[in-house]
Length: 236
Image (tube, rainbow, N blue to C red; front, side):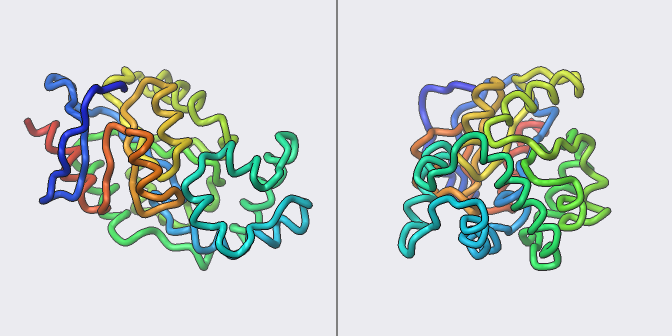
């Protein structure tokens, strides 16, 4: 969703937002998983060089992590010298390793309460992620996942936009009443390609300054601000 100007930060909410059409009310709230609901970046950073050794791509050198957190997915793959044909194999290996280590991955504090609150307010919830259904279920648990009506997993690195469009059709929701919430530049790109509102959270994989530079429609600095913002328009 393209907007012209960014409103000033709401100091009470710690949230930046572009002015939405007043008549629109949210119907579908779609979440990314890793870095948005699940605190998996520390684990990812720890295992990545082991994966690099197995698949023979460039390891992350000391001091490179913060620079890569400012890059998009294509730039990261290019820096790591991962050819396109190898990327799905690497992603599959990472999912397998996470399954073995899933006891080490936790949901961000407040994630379960957020999902339950949005669901109780009547919003339809979905998750679209590159991770596996097993890992999503293991981290979120039954109560939180019970609030999620649509679960799309195993999405390719550059395949989120297509999955978002498919989700809109299956949910019977217009793009204007949907929002995709993620922590990466590719999440913003996917939301725009699907013509839905792009929301970014600053506690995940990409740095906050990189996310803001991509000018998403919403930027959240705290997980507790998500419900306040998303439900405010539905109560108006």
